[in-house]
Length: 368
Image (tube, rainbow, N blue to C red):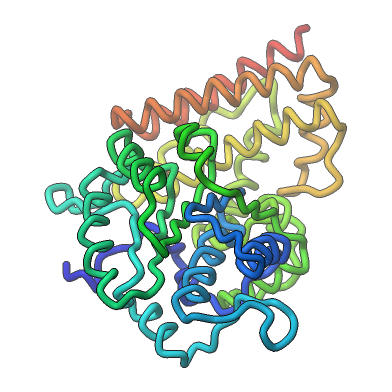
């Protein structure tokens, strides 16, 4: 593959890359916080852009980068804004991935496995030394985007920390993170935070339309996506709504399950063709357990992810005792899933094991 055809780890299939996204919906507070710091001369060298996946964190990082590199003046002509005309020379260079004063750090391509690496390695960070040296030649501002900082391995994280401790002059580092608790405390302490929130229904709809997904309002999609445009697009791309419906139908018979139906769901995750479905199945099982735990504490949900879900959750999670059981199972299965993927456990075996653990927990809840 050439550099132009390599898959981008920070691109969601079926959506424009964050650098190409024209309008950032739902994150006015984060934009205003940055613009206020810029306008008052309190521009920090390191920024931690945090929040759930798919809500616009990377888009915010690219908009900040474009704003800084194009030499804009916040609020010079009215309401403060990160907007930069797409025809601006710096904006066009950024769109082309060719701006000499912008460095993007993300998971690299592994030529041996012909896949993206599972983490950001120190080699990807070492290139910053040359970047800082070369980009200093024109005396302009420089920007580094790390997406996502959660994926830095230990050596890479320490290398980033060193740059944050001794930041080159006129440099801004933007670290996108979905799980800031996974970062080194020293990295967090050296960055100012910008929090991106889950999208409200109207903003979610607008974000999906901007990405080219013109759909009627869907209660199930909005419920399962949880305010994440990225998650909504993944669900649409990979038939996630139908798969969640299958899981609800399977679990509807709890505390017993239909073994042949469980086997069909597990077998669909096998092989090259089942890789995407495997990941989606793991994510939706995790979501189901989260919703079961929440139902035990808060009662039957107002919105359903699939037909019959509310009735099912009311049955298997009637009280806070059940909520604790489902929350514990979610944690256990998250660990099991992470380990299973790390050692390349057979997908069908892993999915079946998780389903049987759900059956076992439901029986324990019913018997108590």
